[in-house]
Image 1 (tube, helix red, strand yellow):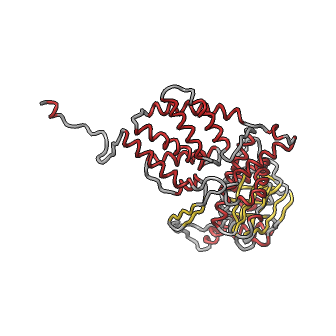
Image 2 (image 1 turned 120 degrees about the vertical axis):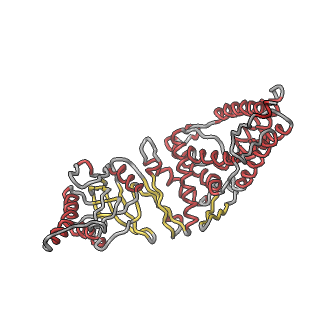
Image 3 (image 1 turned 45 degrees about the vertical axis):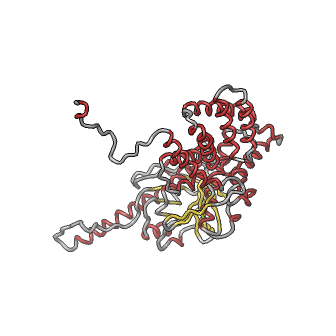
Amino acid sequence: MSQFMQPSIILLRDGTDTSQGKGQLISNINACQAVGDVVRTTLGPRGMDKLVYEATKATISNDGAEILKLIDIVHPAAKVLVDIARSQDAEVGDGTTSVTLIACELLKQSKQFIEDGEHPQIIIRGYRKAALLAMKRLEEMEVGVDALGEGSNGRRLLLERCAATALNSKLICRNKAFFAPMCVDAVDILDKDMNLKMIGIKKVTGGSVTDSFLVKGVAFKKTFSYAGFEQQPKKLVNPKILVLNVELELKNEKDNAEVRIDDPAMYQSIVDAEWQIIYEKLEQCVATGASVILSKLPIGDLATQYFADRNLFCAGRVTGDDLDRVCMATGAKIQTTTNNLPENCLGSCELFEEKQVGGERFNFFTGCTETKTATILLRGGSEQFVEEAHRSLHDALMIVKRSMQSTKVVAGGGAVEMELSRYVRDHARKSPGKQQLIMLAFAKALEIIP
């Protein structure tokens, strides 16, 4: 009787679902299939866009990763598909819907084996064997740049075709001949590391999508400015650029500060000290010889007018990403103080100018010498269209980057998947035992793409 008197040991919280076995496996597969059905109709050039409404924001997209990110999926097994799509988007940039559908179809094909009592390990072993065969055949089918027979233009032709293929199923597919060369030019400008963070995409609502253009340098939207800004120069040749993380604004004493004086005449000395502090900062900036002063923090009306009187340009409240790109492009170094500024902290470019783009003013830095960078100014009629065009261009840029790193391609349009399916199926017929049926299921799953 002693064993019945011992208290039970509770390892999990009360209410925890401990389902396992065949029933739970089938439930997980059904949940993943439901996710696959959501993105299935977005695949390919004839795929349809999805409208996802969340709170007060509506998103129109056919990007599998974007759709799955917006949908609030709570099933733990189905969340794995979201992670697959996000990994594909981060590593490759395109093909998010394809990997999701292939994963769902592999689960669907394994469902019959699970219901028949097959152990999951046997199914996985068969899938792995089939995957190795598919990879082997894939390497045999790859085509290099030389096979295009275009001579020195073969590499660029390949990259433009890859970018156009990535844009083929997107909202801007009709303008792929316009955007594909732009994507190749943007990635070509970068250094060997090909850091895509050095390609900024700025969205300007209004105008036609074909009004978009590529800037071989840095461009960002004009920041908030005070009176005196219009007196500053709007075009400078070979300017020196000073980048600060300093607030150039006249600051009064804080509300909780207390200053006790014996003589009322001393009050004026306190006010003068406040003015002297800001004037010292401004004089130190001018003394560096910089003709463009940028800061992450505000530049007040006094400083704006001070720089305008000396024919200098300034901009405050510049976003961190834009400021980092300016620093990496021009060679400038962010300074947190104006005291003892070194000579090598200044950056340079061939031309700075401020121009109107649509209804916005933009600052352009071109001819950057230190590190090559590019900016794409994207135009469009509506906010949703511009956002989807932005996602499409990101996918195309990622594909061009990958194609530059590995100049091997295979045929698209589902042709590769059908060839791999045929190859695996032929080998499966020669395999003995249960592995034959599992490999045939793998081959059938690949047919979901075409």
